[in-house]
Amino acid sequence: MISPAHQTIIDKIDPEKRQEIQQLHDLITSVVPDWEQWETKGIMGWGRYSYQGSSKACSGEWFHIGLSANKTGLSVYIIPSDENGMLPEQAKDKLGVASIGKSCIRTKSITKLNLPELEILLHRARALVENT
Image (cartoon, rainbow, N blue to C red; front, top):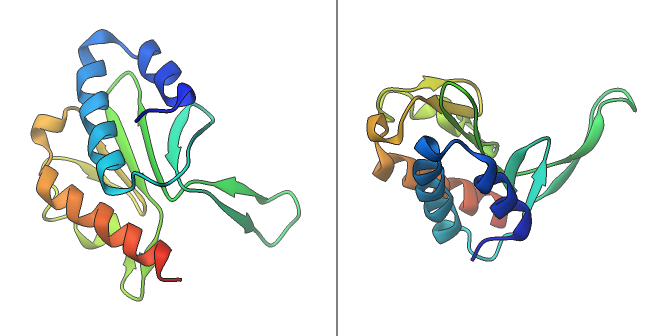
């Protein structure tokens, strides 16, 4: 199932990337089907948590898993971490051709990603969120 907020974002994506973003959306939703789907700053999010930084200006709500498209590619955000650090960083050598940030996996195309490894990370993220 896809939320209206997510469908609106997908509908606005360049047709060349739309199929890939839909495939990633379906993968994420298959792992976390019961998590709230919402949107923030043009990013599709699954799950929600509140955060408070060291200043009042640095607080709000964010997603546990996110997905977005831009002119150069696709980004998957996996926010949960464990005692070994951020999940994307832990798997950077297994994810295929991608630029890995602390919590972000950027790629030009999902054909270059190791989707089974991405799915493992998504399941790990779900377990971390639901076991806290």
